[in-house]
Amino acid sequence: MSIGAVEIFLTFVLKKPKTVTRKEPFVRPDLDKLIRAVLDALTGVSYVDDQQVVEISANKVYADNTSDEGVWISVYELSPG
Image (tube, rainbow, N blue to C red):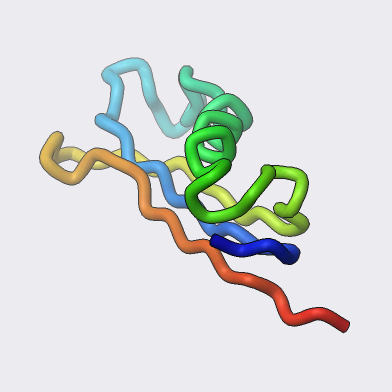
């Protein structure tokens, strides 16, 4: 568990809803709510408190195959200085 600053990379892979089109490629759940859920879940596991997260990169993509659904998470402790 990290006690210093961390950066997180998240890729949420979701089932592609029928309502997603080229003109309107966004639907629920909101990306910020997905991020918040992961940050809360990693508290006490990857870091002491989510205030240690100083950088986040996140994206939401759609999969045609439901077996590909999930979230890819990478957590890196940043060097001090």
